[in-house]
Length: 169
Image 1 (cartoon, helix red, strand yellow):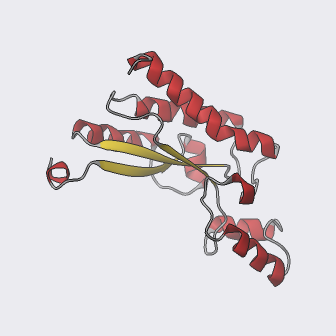
Image 2 (image 1 turned 180 degrees about the horizontal axis):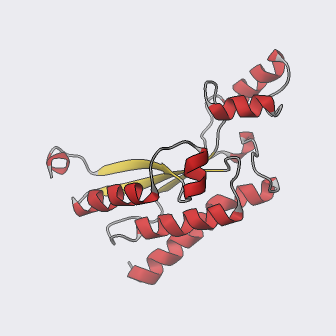
């Protein structure tokens, strides 16, 4: 009510993943049910919601991607007012000051010298997190598989939306 009356139209949630395992790795301290309820209550208030995801964390697997795809499909089909195309899917980024950055450094993925580290930081500067070109592969899967995951998730979401609301919607 109040936010909509004040002119708010959309709330973007950094749900990050639809897998409890990955949420735990990310130390998110939130459950899938809490994220789901936030989206459900937002839509019930007449607002749109956009789900923001991060894929490719250490421990990410084809199973956790499937869990995420199913979960986000459930969220994006809560109402036909949702636009299934408006899901933000980014790759895990090792940014200075984060545990993932320290992990990347310990694995030698951002370079072993100060010069290498500086080159890495310059390479990721002013880049969108959905840009696969500068993404470090933290998974046990080939890079091509990692790069396919946003398309897999989007396919699940679109299929679920069309299946529930029809192709003409």
